[in-house]
Length: 439
Ligand code: GP9
Ligand code: MN
Image (tube, rainbow, N blue to C red; front, side, top):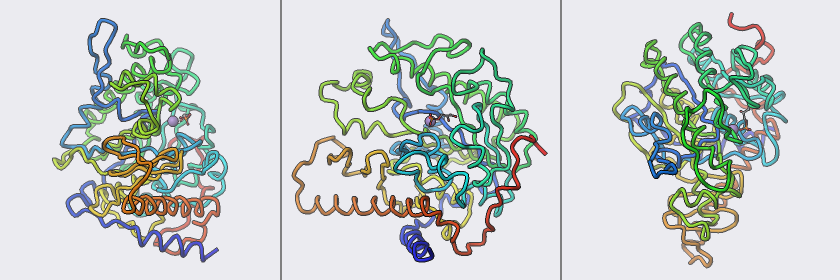
């Protein structure tokens, strides 16, 4: 329905954030490498876990070094925006710049039939990129093998491309060190520039210890085994990522690439958070929905080898903002593309994050979560807002509702079928066959 498309177009035009001239195009023409950090929350960054003798163990030393590197644009107020589609919602947000559905997984219900204009498709057309996903689980999980054809992925290296056996895998597939290690054989034959995504699994619930795993990293000592194991599997993931970076550097691929690392969603659910409180220096008894909201932060780090412009950036944003941010770093004009997020490095970024889980939002001043309003800096609850505060709350409600409504129009109405000419050809999913390997 063309009127709906016009409304989406108007939204895009009204919300477009101009690129930052300091960073626009600094990664032009480079390979893109995503590292999907499964269930990884921001609080793990720079966290030290005390063992039973009181000795501190840094959980993720490698990711910590990236976080404070001059080569990294690191965001410490970046929130996941997924709902029931979990990993698949994160993939939708990151690569389409719209949201998953309010119920179920968009990949599962619509990934095999909708029209898309996703990152692999765009970069294939405007930048001559070859695209591939590497993931050690079965290809049909979350309907990926169908959805990726519509996102424009040239290759999908799923479990069938790796040597998976009992000793190196678990219910979600091949453990991360093996997945990265075995992926290199395929990556080396990909035409550059490439656009690739590595989806890790080892730091997935239930965070169990495994042989050849984290080599004795201590367990936390709470009454919840899910929490207790989380640090050790995160430590394993950290080492796996480090080993992969070592390869990228040794092969020379590193300096021609931009590497995007992101946590897809929380790893410890709200119902378990009170038992996490003590490890975070908080009080279990006073743990509130404010604390839950703050824990929805996940890492977002963009490594641009060779730059010295990297810094820890305090802009408030979410997964929907990734694609515009990346496009601008690559020097691609995306102003006509159906992207609902904004460049996190743009001075015009609006610093308001819609949460899909609760249909609430987070901003630097105020947070709305589970129907309550808090001061973001202190956690003080606002039960009786003054008129000025009330106006801000109403405006934030409206803005986030609008963003989600526009997203739902795109996804449930399959509106990109009608997207006006923006220089890109429609994607043809029938040209992909993920069982044939590299050709
Ligand atoms: C499965 C993996 C996990 O292939 O990506 O998905 P999740 O359970 O986190 O949504
Ligand atoms: Mn996940």
